[in-house]
Image (cartoon, rainbow, N blue to C red; front, side):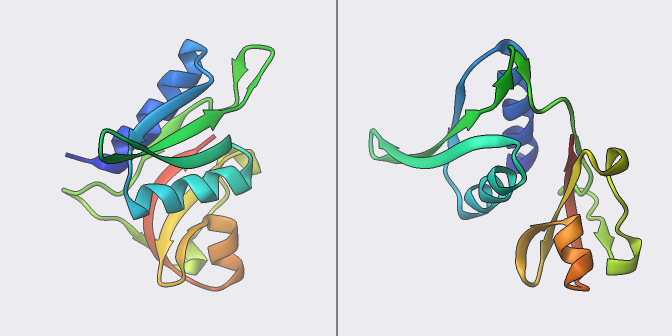
Amino acid sequence: MDTIANLITKLKNAGNAGHESVSVPHSALKAAICAVLKKEGFVKDCEERLEGGKKFLVVSLFAENRVPKIKGVERISKPSKRVYKKAEEIRAVKSGYGALILSTSGGIMTGREAKKAKLGGEALFQIW
C-alpha cells in the first residue's frame, strides 16, 4: 500500500468535500511531508493526536470562500517505480504556483529548496 499517495489523495478529497481537517495514521515521513506543506502554505496546521492507543496526524486545511487551496496532486515516484531527480533536472510546477516534494539526503523538502541547496533525490509528488 502506498501511504504517501493515500495521504495526498485524502488531503485533496477532503478539501474538495469542504472538510476543515482530515485525520491520517501517523508516520515520521507523513509528519515531515505535512511540515513542508504547512511551510509552503498548502495546509494550515498539522498536529499529532493519540486516539485509542494509536497515533494520528490531524491536518487542518485552507479554504478560501469554500474553494480548497489544494487543487490537484500527482504522485511521481511509486513503490513499483522509483523516480530520482538531480538538482539540475528540477523544474517549476505549474509555473511556480505548485510545489515538487522531494526526499533528499537533507530530509523532505520542496524542489526550490533542493535546487538552491544543490541536492537531488526521490521525487515524491507534485501539488498545486
